Every structure is written in C-alpha cells, then in structure tokens.
Image (cartoon, rainbow, N blue to C red; front, top):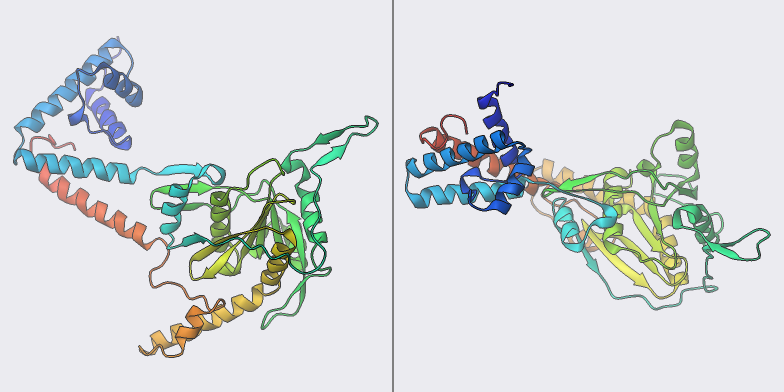
Length: 384
C-alpha cells in the first residue's frame, strides 16, 4: 500500500479549490451531487481519498466555527473572498464566440466603447456593385458547387478590389503616394485581447496595406497586421456577419498596427450585407450598416486613402498636447475643435487597462488583509 503525503494532499486540495473559486468551508457534505462535482473538480478518486477529503473539509468547518471574530465578520470575509475569486477567474472566448456582454466588458478594459448608428441608404456614386458568386461550376459535370468562405476568400477580396478605384493610393502629410493592395491572411492570428478577466483571440480574412509592405512581409514572414490600414471580414451570402466579432478584430488591429486607431474594418458577404467599423473619436468605435455596396465601398475607399493623413494629424495633436503638459500649461484653449473633429484623436487620460490594474491591486491588498486576519485565527491553521 502506498503511503500518502497527507500535508501535500491537503495543500493540493486547497489550491485546486481556490483555482476553481470554491470555499471548502462552505461545502455541504450532505449534498451528494455537490460532493460528486467536488470530487471531479479536485480529481479525487477512490473511497479512501474521498473519506480523507470529507474529513479534511469537516475539520476546516470546525476550525471556522471556533475561529476568532464574530459570525458576521467571518461571513463578510468569506463573501468577499468568494466574490474576489469569481472576479479573478478569466473567461476565454474566440472572437467568433464572443457575445455583446463579453465584448463590452473586454473593450471596457481598454477604455474602448462602441455604438451602432443608423444604416446608410444612399446609393453612392457610379455603377451599383454586383454580386460575387460563392459557387463554382463543376468542370464536365454541368452543375455548381458552393464553396466555403475560406476556399473563396482570395477570390472575394479580388472581387471587392475590382469595384474600387484602380491604382488606389494613399497620401500622408510626410509620406509619398503608395499603391494599396489586398492580401488574404486567413489563418493568421491577430493581437490577443485580455482585460477585465476576459480573454479573446481570433483571426481575419483580408488585410489592406501598401504594396510595398505586402511585398516586405512576404519576404520576411513578418505579420502584415503590423502595417495594415484595414481588415476585411467576408462571409458567404448564406452566413451572418457578427458585429461582436468585427468589433474585436478592429480593436485588436488598433493595438497591433502602426496606424493605431486610424484603422478601419469592412465586413461583407459581397451581396446584401455591408458594414464599416472605424474609430469615430478617441477609443469610440462606430458600427454602421449599408444598404448599398457602392456607397459602402465609397466610404471605405475614402477612409483608406486618408489613413496616413488622419494618423499624422492625430499624432500632431498628441504631440502638441504632450508639450503643453510637459510645459506645465493647463490652458487647453484651441484643443476643443481638435478633440471634437473626426481626425483629432487624442488618447484618454487613463491608459488602456488601467482599471484592470487597479482591480488587481485592490484584490492584492484584500488578500494581505485577509491573511493578517487568518494568521490570528485557528481557521487558517497557519496554512491558508
């Protein structure tokens, strides 16, 4: 029979319980379903091990009842501890699986907000955009087969670009004109997002960048997201475009791209569904649906060609603001127009994720207070 290291076993149970947000002192030993779930959670198997765990929990409960402090104080500490453990657990989702509540909490950790504005029904200039075919004729068979979105991503990107200005160029304040290109990047992960105990990761379908940087990244293997002005999310005309997914994609790109919050996202099924997402002001994402693809592509093109111009203007405003702060000037006269304009993006006073950091510090301080309390109480038995 193998000897059991009882102290190590108890320590492992305590650590596993804390990791799963379970307070052993609150476990109902008479509830068979709860105990069954606890055995699985703590990976306890065998009659002997289950008996030891039950005895250990009973011992902890007895020590708690005999502990110093009033019942109310002990209850408050327990409730605070349970709440803290729930807060500390990180919820993980993919971009595609994230719901509105999850996205709101996650973006709030970066001080980002979003809003859905009224749909745009203007037809736009020029010929109406046609319809991309997600189906391909079967050679020799006389029929058609509808391919999946990944199989037709590159063709869809080429189709979108064909409806835009030929030789599309971008011109910044200090940068010469460069030709813009579209690139299939499916399978490549974007910058992961992690804030407010929420974590998400995901990919995109297409990138928009200068041809120079596309060629550079093709040679070096560097992520094209680092130099991207925009993302393109495509879905078949039988699928739904998820606004929550596109919000996370744009936020992730803004943290990775050299153009920061000057980036934009186009979402479409290349037929009836057309969306544009961009930062309309500091840390505020606008989501807009379009009735006509022509108008959507017109606006997308306008945002693309002004990417560097808008970025340079925002940097100039930020530099001016920083100089004023360093000089000890508090008079912000002249900044109101810049702050309210569509191009004058200025970072918020609090850095992204600051509230998450504050919560972590508060939790750490609480742990110290609780440790001090328990050190004087038989509840902890010196091993909390």
